[in-house]
Image (cartoon, rainbow, N blue to C red; front, side, top):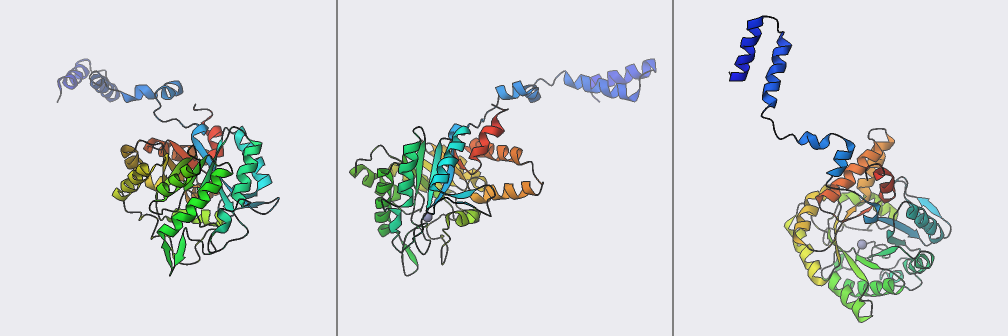
Length: 357
Ligand SMILES: [Zn+2]
């Protein structure tokens, strides 16, 4: 028995008046005297918590995805992603205006063409949906950043991210098409080219094509670490890009691999990427953290469609407090090491962080 406890006991028996509770209180007080480190001091009030908050979200570091359909005057709801739409170009402009009011100024644009073929020709057509969208959006808004998804899957009749031969996706012939797409996207006003097909050498190929065509100031945001994930399910409905056969496992990464993520990231950094991306985000926080340690470029995390839809579905059932869960999820992605987050929740960030920043 410790001496202070013994003292308490003796005192208690001495006067005969103290209750058991008083004795316990005295024991606790005695222990407090040597408890110097109290992390709870820094959690005392909201002002204190804000003062020492390590991770803060701001809408300026979010990118909102937009799906632009070639049809006119449409706003087609995506059933698996409540609140997300395929917009015709005119409606997309209104959406961008609304998002600006929510402090979102960076957008990644996905095109949904009416015509698909086996060479993805509408992806680099100067009258293609993305090219027209770039021009129109840049005409209407001066202070925004336009990022273009640079891939073949939305424009290929088979829905794969490259040229197909004998059911195989050919790497090098795909690079030549990616170069054409990147040049036409840059020529129509894209600020950032974002190759997403996980082809080897895609960053180097696009960088040299852009430079040769005097687009040396157009940046590359590489989907460097993109896993073959089941969390993309709702996106495929949104972008109408489900492969007609097979899967994407021969080019997207195998989810159990971590060292390979570092290899992919370092390769793309060396090839001249300006941003590197990890996709998806929530099931790959360890990867975000590991990649962040190894690179010196801004790291982007894509909080993908399945991550969005899970929260929406649970919230619609009243199982989760939507705003609080969104804030906690997005904070975890930032805390893991992401500098920039692409998210279908981008438009919610301003509202949900309003009282904490
Ligand atoms: Zn693709």
